[in-house]
Image 1 (spheres, rainbow, N blue to C red):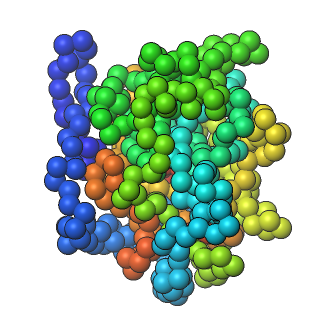
Image 2 (image 1 turned 45 degrees about the vertical axis):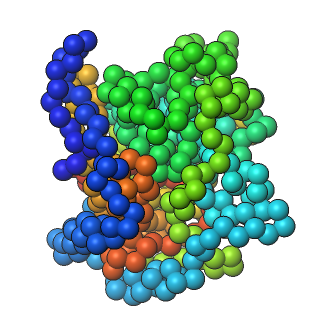
Amino acid sequence: MNYKYFVEKKDRKFSMKKICVFDIRKNSNRKGIGRYMKRLKIVLCMAMCAVTLFGCKKTETGVPGENVPQSDSQDASEEVQTATDDRETEDGKVRSYLTGEWVDEAIGRRRPIAFMFNNLEPANPMSGISRAGVVYEAVVEGGLTRLMGVMENYDDLDKIGSVRSCRNYFVYYALELDAIYVHYGQAAYAKDLLNEDYVHNLSGLSGIGNTVFYRTADRKAPHNAYASAEGMKEGIEKMGYRNSYRSDFDGKFTFAVDGKSVDLTHGKQAKKVSPGYLVNKPYFEYHPEDGLYYRYQYGGPQIDELDGEQLAYKNIILQYSEWMRLDENDYLAFDCHSGGLIKYITDGKVVDGTWMRFDGDVGTTKFFDPTGKELVVNPGKTWICIIQDTKSDAVVIE
């Protein structure tokens, strides 16, 4: 199991397990396809074993590897042949790396921000979360979840948040999308990673904290720290971060082309998706009239405070990851590199697949169908739930 190599290490300031960062980039080679394919074959074997072991389970179980008909994979692989691979410009617009939809070129070619949203009940409703083209949700200490919203279209927002602190695995997810990571402080385990030169971040506890963030009087601390678009832009400029994507970045998702949608006709039903998080008890309900999944948590619809609208997404991905508890304070770590199983959910259907990360920390996680073909997803916003692999039984798909 590779958690960016967990190593027991004594620190002069504190004694506990720390994450020792080993720069995989030193051992990675973008031309080393053979090495990647070997890793991919291992993950695909895991997927095929899961199909064999769990094929007889009921539809509502959350364990990856439900007995998906072979025709599903064929449909998905056929879509791959016609999926958009480049970034053509048309009438001043470009396809978003986050959603696959046409956006103004100035927005689509600018690096997104990856914003750490406070998801405690007193911090809801959030402000600006609906602008995120991609949202990551993962458990932190105490069974709570934290959200990371990756957004590119935020220029008109004066209030984004409230913001919370960093957990190292969210940094790895931000790096996948070449995003600038925005947070307010961090767990001790994340300090070494945040100090890496390839991590571009804006922290409320740094020298630019007062430039980027401010506090409101409508909520009690720590639920009242917010950022503004202008503050983040000024912070990015002061830190000297680049505004454009890396020259070698080619996106995380493979989107279906205009006018076509991913065909999951033979997938199993997914009208309601409950990822199994115990505290906020979130779930998504499918609305066939617009083809979107609407988000609920804490016993009601999750809305954005700025527009009063309920959050809704075209795609849901359940990404199963190995994990470990780091100490008695319940700090967690997730394997963000080795690969594993997924469930892809769209248009009221669910199919199985795998994930694999390439090129170490700065590399991108890609999704694959059981045959090894890159998974094609529908254009639109995506919500990614990171699922602890040992707690997959809590996932319910109906």
